Amino acid sequence: MKKIFTLVTLIACLALMTSTVFAAASVTRIKDIAKVQGVRANQLMGYGLVVGLPGTGDSDDTWQMIQSTVSLLRNFGITVNAAELDSDNVAAVMVTATLPPFVREGDTIDVTVSSMGDADSIQGGTLLQTPLRAANGDVYAVAQGSVSTGGFVAGRGNNRAQRNFPTAGNIPNGAIVERTLEDDLGQNGQISLSLASSDFTTASRITNAINSAYGNVAHAANPGRVDINVPGYYRNNIVQFVASIEDLPIIPDTVAKVVVNERTGTIVMGGNVHVDECAITQGGLSIRIQREENAYQPEPYSYGTSLVVRNVETNAREEMSSSVVLPATTSVSDVIGALNAVGATPRDCISILQAMKAAGAIHATLEII
Image (cartoon, rainbow, N blue to C red; front, side, top):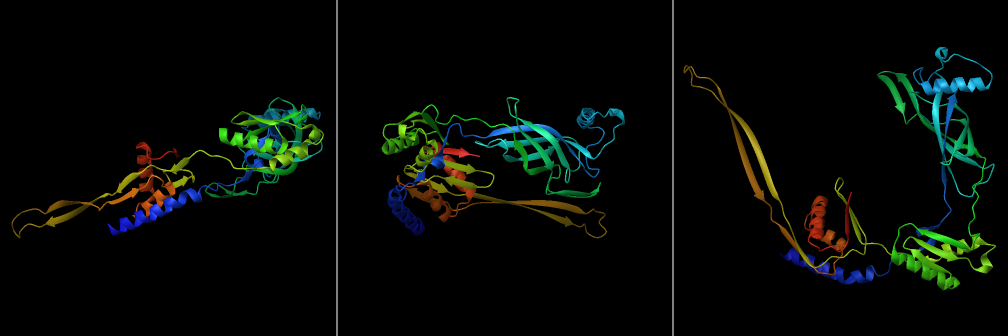
């Protein structure tokens, strides 16, 4: 009882300090919680062939490789019979890349090459010229070069060793940009900020911060977007205007949330999560079952038989429970600290938090993953 009284006293002191500790919320830049709409990357994809493999390419059963090889040779004026083609140093692959914003013709980007057949490895092969298309079907880059996988396959059958994944690799700077994505950032005199996490309070604070610096030029269209009219003296220097906005300090607001991972016993919570006054009792029932086998022998010359008897002994013991009373100003971090002090395990804490949420004692979103 003395231990519980001391613990409650300590928690009460922490509760009095809570309003001071969590009042100073972290200040961040607008750049870290929002981005300019229109500044985005685009995904590219293409189909190609990797040649020059040391017998680790696709087998004759991979029809897409056979057809692609025949079509490729036909373009060079060479006619071959697909049924007679036996080339295990060629692999059919898919080539993917991400086209960053504001790239120009002639810039290079990295590409990823992945086997789509039954090739054992594409290490050391050369990707032939492969057009990379966007979702609209237009070609924006062309890839070609030596593939590096960072892995290998050695041996066959049961005597086989493999490191990493030799059927997928990359080509640094392996694609040349052939078409620029034109952007009209700020050309109509307006830009928009897209919030990473939609929130009414955060959008309002961003609007107030921008208007305090540049006048009444911004308004929140919705919790996830802030529209900004570019001042006249910045019309010819959009980059500097966006850079100055991104550097403005802001205090973002977040939803009170407790995230629980039942598989690993991990609990992550925000500092703005508080609970109502409640009492928690933590205890457990320990059950132990023992099984013994005893053999009984008959008396000599009694014509009896040996007998095996199984004895089962069950013991049940209820452990002494520990009670904790928490004031209404206590945060969830104080709750977890109190539960750990009385010997509760992480999984016990998870069960108690779920019960507290069901009882309405926690004013936060409890997310279980």
